[in-house]
Image 1: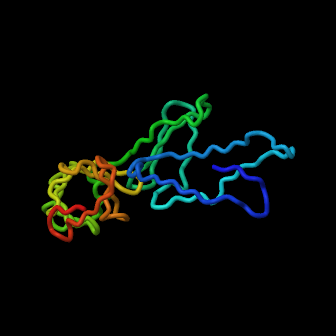
Image 2: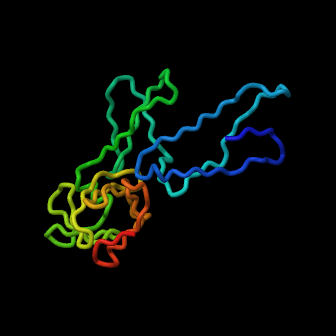
Image 3: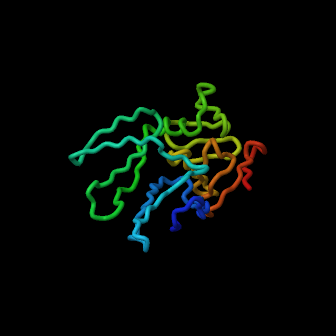
Length: 204
């Protein structure tokens, strides 16, 4: 943030903030803008936030806000995928107090298919993801098998992607939009998945 004197020309400069450490996580960002007082000229200072944008992120551009009077309420989702639910106290004495976001989803099968996509290719549980390749679902649990990577465990959907657990690499986060880039949680780094091209486990 910078403070500047109003003029026809502005000395403000763009500032970028990297949020790579938050990959795959649900985050609520709030900007608090306040005026420190009056300036020597007697004018009240004004604060502005201009041209705020997010790159390579998924964000809620039209959230549904609902006020409730009791401790329980119902919310009907219009989408069959996932819904993000946050709850905050309207008259909290603490600034910006809100609950930890939780993710509500349907059954495991719906979540996996929402993430990977792919119609069933036969009656034996094999499906073809348009971006992740062939995978086998032996049942409606979270384990799936891929010919090139072996067994993987599907964790959960997030905004824009999903978590998958690999026994050798640990928790991985990716999405159809950024694949073959995969975020490796244990190392806090991005890796490339070339398994589909080589036919065996290949990561760089």
